[in-house]
Image (cartoon, rainbow, N blue to C red; front, top):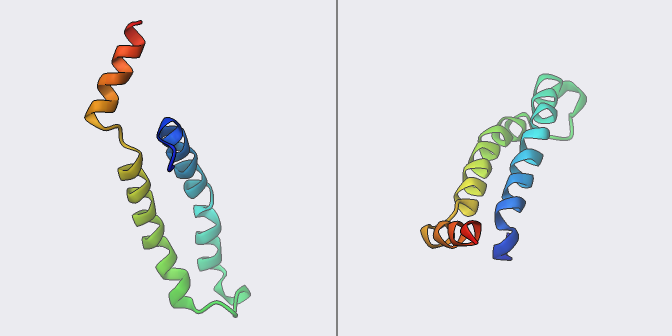
Length: 77
């Protein structure tokens, strides 16, 4: 996400990856008895952190106004 030309694609990939691991987090929370080495509070905290992470990824990958103008310029060519 540091290299501007691939920032949008990287953000989409990170959002998809974060959504893909959500069932794992929910499963671990439902079957907490199998994961005794992880405190229950940590399993609960993972879900809000994941939502915050999604918001951060979306914020970091949004197109700036000047980026949108330059993209429309290149599309016109």
